[in-house]
Length: 481
Image (cartoon, rainbow, N blue to C red):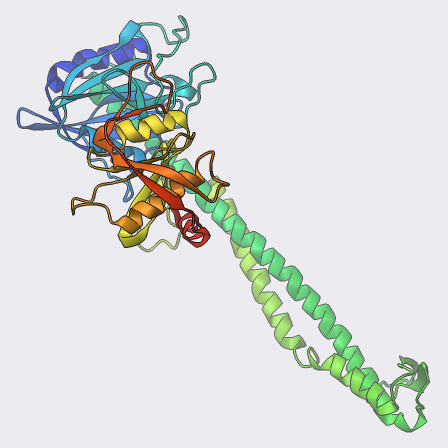
């Protein structure tokens, strides 16, 4: 059960006096949580950890006292938050319209940023926006069908739906220690859920092993059938060897007495008329050679697999009957031979507004995905000294090369970036094009101009002749992660 409107208000009433004016020391993607972010804050020499959880049924915002273990790879969105928020001071925390929306206003130097925290069930999300409310990025992809909440667009708050929340004053948590009670409540709830997830994960792993063992059992059973057929072929080969003098080329079969049994019976041996008697005999021996002596070993292998299947089936029954809490406790024993817990599900991060391509000398080239993303790339994801490129007088992507701090971007990297600018433009099928090159500081966005349209204060033009091998190299080296 998520926090309702009144509980969010009570949390903010409790925490705002303490964190107003606090600085953001770090941004963490918790390892255990799902769809969550933690802000490490510092105020008056004291540290605080503000947790934002967007998982359906558990959406909430509050401070936590326990240490939060972070994911080894924070992901693009958390890295972007660190880039924009580290060192920023919290100016205000509000709950507009007493809805399940929390707005956090921050100031770093002369730059302002806003966090829109939507604690709205299935559509819960966290947006980073600039001072004017234009979205820079979001933790999750946009789930709203009525609001287009994507980078480059202005944030629009959710539609308020009276009666959707729990009634005010539901009384789950006391007002005096509300954040402590909330932390304890959800810790217990998530621990139980984690125990169930851990248990179910191990059952699923064992079921996969069981499925593989059953497939192996079927394969071994087929080997036994083949071995039995091979033993029969060997028997026929020995009979043919004894009666080889009676066989003539061109015969399709021969009937001989089975001298290897107590009561001899007539046995029919099929022959290939195109083969000589010796060749027919060799064919039967060859067919039996693979499995003739292997039957005892194959049967022992089948017995071992049957025992493994039985043990796995017993283990599944044991785990299914074990309480999740007891199972979670049992995982702490170092002597337990069990699977590791399932990895924490990380939030499916909203894609950045640009694609990345590896160029020469470890330079990365960024290419805007569309018109709105072009604005986001140029205005929010690029430094003032970054190289900026665009095909002259044609529709296409903004292309940037981040400034390395080591002087001008090498000429061959600029040529690579120009190739990508042409490829992701309306002139991609041409043999060449004019490409504008400048620094990001000379790119200006005029008010009310269409998405992707900018004005250049300074520029130079490259007359680019496209090299197919250069373009192929760049496209093959796209950075997917």
